Image 1 (cartoon, helix red, strand yellow):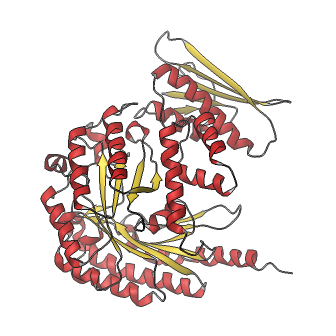
Image 2 (cartoon, one colour; image 1 turned 45 degrees about the vertical axis):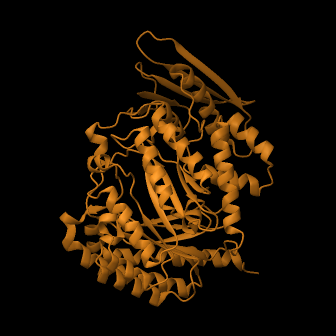
Length: 500
């Protein structure tokens, strides 16, 4: 699909709106007039107003639909107003062409709950918030209620804890190896069958990076609140390697953490020995992620375990004493059906985990699934919507509340991912990370350090090398990049204690 962008540089926002209505379409952006355009967006600054125009013509000889509006010049947030205006114009045109109305309206961002929290903290009342989101942003009442409830649950979960301060941090540690690569996966993870020889040298260097990070934490006076070991599949490590990693980490932790999560992930990597190794340390939360309890679907997506192994791993974790377990599910997997998803969810609820996270399938460019044509995007995918709605109703009835929510590109039916939890067992790291409440320090290949300041200071990011081979080969540079912490917190100190 060819999109003309004339007189402005809001192509990213325009492309996102096109993607909502025409998922899977290749979007080609042009900045000068071309005869074969299908969507045209035009912005012109005038004396009295910024004028925006959108045109849409689809199909040979098809009618050209037109929409326009004006935005007052020089008002606060002018660029954002233009973004939203283009969103409203394109929503109006595309919904007329396709007959489809995305439930998240014109919102294309990852963090709708952060948007709501910011306005609540600014004093906006619920009635005005609803009018803004369901009116101007065209969000459905259902999705607005979900996001608002999530924001309220976050307030409840964080209320007993100290408010986030400028020197609070959480830690993310990456183990980028898996027993096999899932068909839908786009994360930086590698089949251990192909990279087994890298695991030990990678772990040795990771321990060094963790030490360097804790040295900075101590020197800069930072307070570590939560930690999360993710991947990949961290339990691809042997019990001995897991013990080394956790032993090294907790030798450096000086104060009790609010939460420590290990993503056990794949049931075929969990055994009693590894669970015992984790229980020696204050690991307070683990993930056991079936994605589905349908063996045929598991085989189709490349997961080499069975539903029975998932249940066995869950029972072993309970026997080992883990009292906060999360289980991930995916709605819309290839070969799954509404009835199959319902069966999976009901069986998971019967196991009674503390957390259940329901993802909607998102197919990224880097995923093997993207090139297999096993999934064909559809603007409105009724079965996956029914799956997500069933999950919300069933989990709500079983005593789970939504506590974090995020969205991704290329998600079936433009839906969302939601973490549900029983009251008091919410994943704190997930809240801190998703709502960007404080800094996240990343260690390991593919991790990102996200430096969160205060006020108008933008969030800064420092990226580690993506692949284990790069991480090992360029490890000296990995350590050098830790200097960004020194600079960031040096500037923060000046803001905290300005020179007189």
